[in-house]
Length: 283
Image 1 (spheres, rainbow, N blue to C red):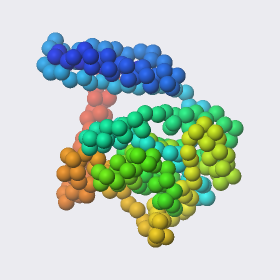
Image 2 (cartoon, rainbow, N blue to C red):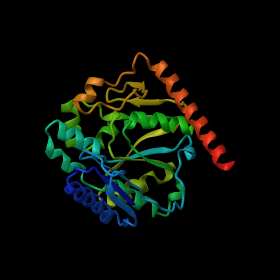
Image 3 (cartoon, helix red, strand yellow):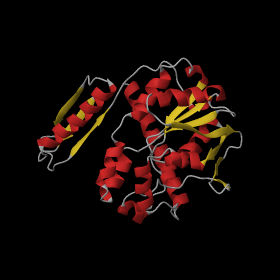
Image 4 (spheres, rainbow, N blue to C red):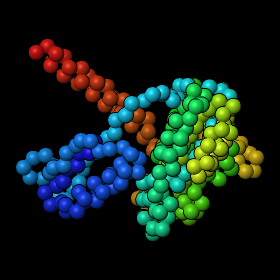
């Protein structure tokens, strides 16, 4: 479903570009566009050339591969990653436009399709993507939800990052463990790890075992020099543009005060929600 709104002064070419992009993905993934709307931003007149909107997809899940299913002893596999929008932005802002081409693939979706149609999905406990918190942040979050720990071989992870993308990140000073890689993480029974790696290899997708689940409740990395360290997520994702680098990734000094304010805002919103529900239901 697609819903796009244009400001009064917007170039209609933006609409064509937006729809061309969506329809391209729709065709590549065989997911039809079924509904939506295209109109001016609400109101009689909205000055400006903004384009705002969103895209949604609805499907039926046959089996949920949730994080709560992860158990100690599970193998952790990861597919190759070249990133998506974040890497594209890094490449464009740093003047390395040629790297954008590396991100133009649907290997993530092909890997999912291959594994979900296999006869061993009952032995795959969880599948998730490496998002904008990066692998460092995702592993920490997954551990928290699954009440487990992980031991990761950093060398194996680095080998799965697209070489041109990794070179770009090194050149621009971006930590690859703190940024979206468009890789698929697979937590599975040790008996099927080789099946997964070989099946993905058959469709030209590189996949390797990067670690193991344990009961430490920590994210531990072993590095090339054989030294190990417990890794914690940073306050923000890796800074991948000059503006983000100025802001930095460190936890701000007023973090505790910010946390209190956020919690208070959440409580007020829940209270307001309850009041509105009570008001409407009473009439």
